[in-house]
Image (tube, rainbow, N blue to C red):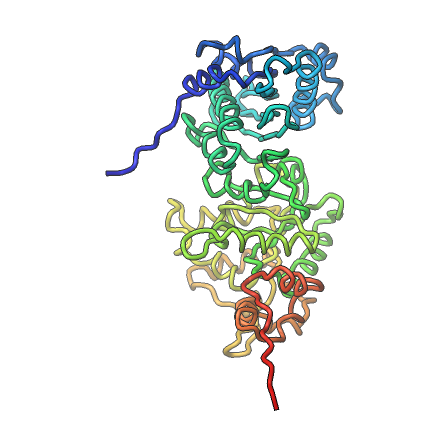
Length: 478
């Protein structure tokens, strides 16, 4: 028989927390009513859990409590942090644990905006909790960003309330297993109601947690389509870094990053900036890895994932992890953020996949539907040549072969500068193949080091990445 998923309802979770004599804290909710705390009031036994519940809806009153916000933006991560820290400070100042030494304080907060009257903006928000995992311990913190998917404000409020209960319960009962905590956020909530597109764990309860792996869980579990993090591993909110920007993206397995990847990126970006008159300051470069590229043996090897992103981080690149197996979905995702111009650095083999009709059998409109989303007027593909190792032929947009039925369409995109060859590439890199590099690393062969960007080979050897092992020296005797 199939396994039946068992989880507690929001009411059951709220009651469990209320009946725990060691959990005590405050609720501060702005933007969608006191949707979380009402679960605890209705569950019963709330007097032993709730120190205070408040909603500072009026901006002037809210500013008087938490301070002013730059550009009067209230639905921000900074606002959430101010709320959490202010409430924690108050509870510490006003209460002591002399008579209740086992009590653990917490502060839950959210600042959200629900769907507008015209239904043109479905709303989003920040949700978080600061809590003591152990009595008297420094506070740990879980912060997440949500995007509403429902088309009714009342339904959004109810979903937010359930999410808040799940977060509070998860903080106290699943802090030792952040993966379980993440999964539990959707208990009694379907993924078509709300999207969690950023999550961040901090503090002593999560001192061994790598937030990049937690971001990966969001994509892997279908909670969001893509996550982005900086070169130093910090989780980033996509809207904060790509909204109304120019985007240049390079997709690859990056296992490992080679001189070909860097050459494609540098020369493609140079052409993109020239063609669009964009500036480096107004352009975001993303190195994208799809979930499909991360899977090995049917599942994701997390060590391998971290190896790849550590190398990209060492080179200073911003990394995007997505579930966009098709390129048109990547471009469609960017379009949701009012992007100015999009440049895609791509190898010949990937472009051939784009023009493979078998790739789009799941679409009712087939390849034409995909092309309508991919070859937008603001998109340019910068094509990096490929040297066939068998024939020695160098393939570019001028001599690659697409299906006869697509030849005219292909010519159209070329004539309209949607497909542009990278001509200033380094021909010395034409015989660098990542699979061959991986084979040499695994077999302890030499020569691969010079095919990687400066410093990458040293990092691989130092950390034992991609199966690298130090050669064993065998002593010989005369």
